[in-house]
Length: 179
Image (tube, rainbow, N blue to C red):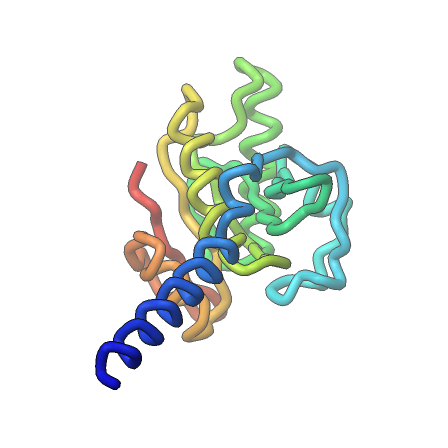
């Protein structure tokens, strides 16, 4: 009887392992792309920011695409300083954008991720990893910092994905991913 139980346990474990590997198999075929738009109503962090805000003054929207579907989205702007509020982000991205027009078109030295959401399990972690790689390859960006809400969920997400806490502000918190 114990041999039969062992065999059943082995079969159960194989089925569970197979389900887990199938759950994350999509990640291998996913790619990071720049988006022209997104459904801001899906954004759990900053739904009040419209697409015009997300795409103006050098701010960008990126998504992880898999089989013609967007599985995760991250919005960020480029600055030369770390903002503590969305208003500061708006002013700092505008300043960095206008200064870049006079120079070499390279906007800011810091990428500020101000919202992220996932439509598929594992998408949030994947987009952070892919954006990190993209920033590392750039020749003018030297930091990836977040402008996150003051929630425990945001804190756990960023610390779990390798960021360090930079500062806690009145309305937000900043985490930094080391480049």
